[in-house]
Length: 155
Figure 1 (cartoon, helix red, strand yellow):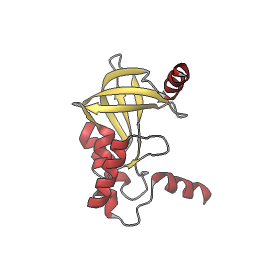
Figure 2 (cartoon, one colour; figure 1 turned 60 degrees about the horizontal axis):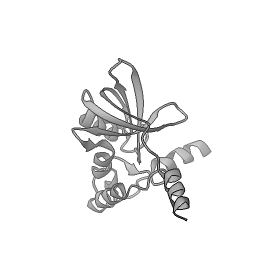
Figure 3 (cartoon, rainbow, N blue to C red; figure 1 turned 90 degrees about the vertical axis):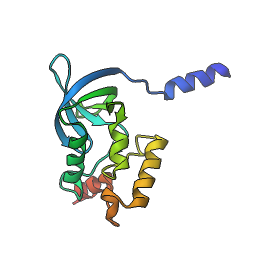
Figure 4 (tube, rainbow, N blue to C red; figure 1 turned 135 degrees about the horizontal axis):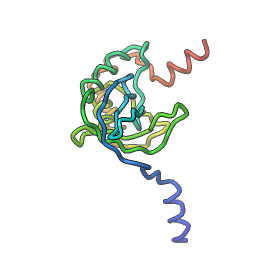
């Protein structure tokens, strides 16, 4: 029985694949940026646990600008967990030990991406931002990016 529990824990745990430090050289949108690693290779990072508004969506540009203010030109620590279908690294990212994903949700510039994340601290930060009506939560009809993309694909 103990062995079964251990096997289940290991199979559900998604350990990081790699950790690097690099400089943010481009902010694409509110949840994606490019980092230059120590070998001068550019790596596209998709922030783990969040989904930011699309570029043409309400708050899309505000979200991108907020992420840029937090990390553009700065050194970030990247903890990679996987690679998505677009070959972006799915990763946690930190500036001065502060999680960029947590800050974006806290400031109302991204959603907690519950489909791919069970991070209770992201859920709590989203509830707080929503209650304070900050950022995208100032819009009573805010549309989650996954719903926006789905609607765009149907049209």
